[in-house]
Image (tube, rainbow, N blue to C red; front, side):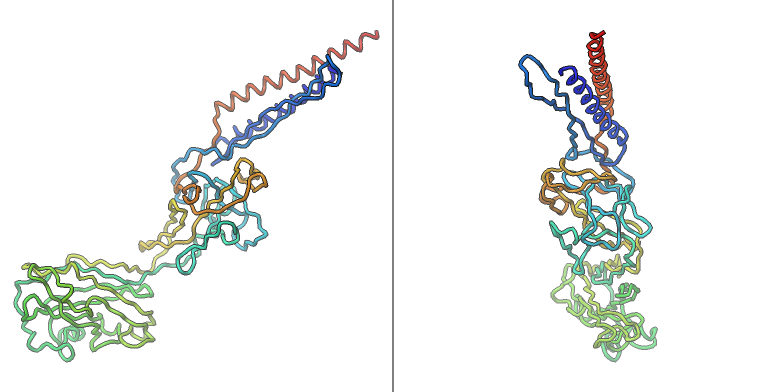
Length: 453
């Protein structure tokens, strides 16, 4: 009966508009949810077979929910270095737990990058989802696998220990006085029996007093600070200086007499610049074997690892001015502790230490899908794969169509309040109109029943 079909069409209108109201309510409630993607309920008519010519049977309406997962939210600056956003396509890979992950544990995908460090040191977002990344390998690389999620692990930024970097390079900027007299001790100078190293080791009681000394600090393999000095003695040969490198104190090394590590000549050009070709190679690079190795080595009692220190003398000059050290620069660093976490746009997570060292921890992968709007929503503003979404691929940030990581940033919700409130009004009116269909059909049926009276 056409009146019954009209009533059922009204009921379908109530159901469809109820779904629309639910979607609008979710959108409005999540207007401030990080990286929330708005949902929308669209309507499609239902047509029933018209069995009798001249009569119409109402089919009503059905609701179809559509996700706008692919819509990019506004990237906004944040005050936390662990807040992350993806600028472009892709999702963070997350799990429900940090330690003890297995292949059977579910992985989900989110763009909600409001990550912080929990009590165990893991990066966790507001929904208590743990960020996954490729751990750094022993050789400093990352085992990037585009399809195997088990290669990724929950990123921990606390259980790292202290950081030490042994010195490998020292750069000297100094001037030696060209106008100074030839050293008075040159006549008795001998690198073995009457050396400048002996003068330093004996506090001047023996050995040859140098004309100029350049002291350099060297960080050893355990983070300790050691001192190495280069003493210079002006020669009778123009633009030539005798030089020795020795440890201070001499007991730090097991090498030549009085801690002597190297001897040779430093030669300058006529214009005052150093002649690197004429300068002895022994003065440009020092190699100290491990404490348990052959001499020259660190003193056996120190228990230190082998170390090679390249000394850059390119900025050593000989001008007619007082001998002076302008600067000594080296790349070593003593023991340091973590003070900050840094993430770059390529997704590399690094620990920053108070000794200026930076240690890479992991690399964040970006998961992409052919049809992101078909992903299944789960609690925590996250998604799970579906057949309709297509095959997942994990990519490095900024490569192969994956978005870049925006550190110290968050993606805003894509909800437009003005559009939602407008839709709310339209949905309310449509719901009222559908209810009017039911009341009208009810009145018509009542009239039909009253015919018998």
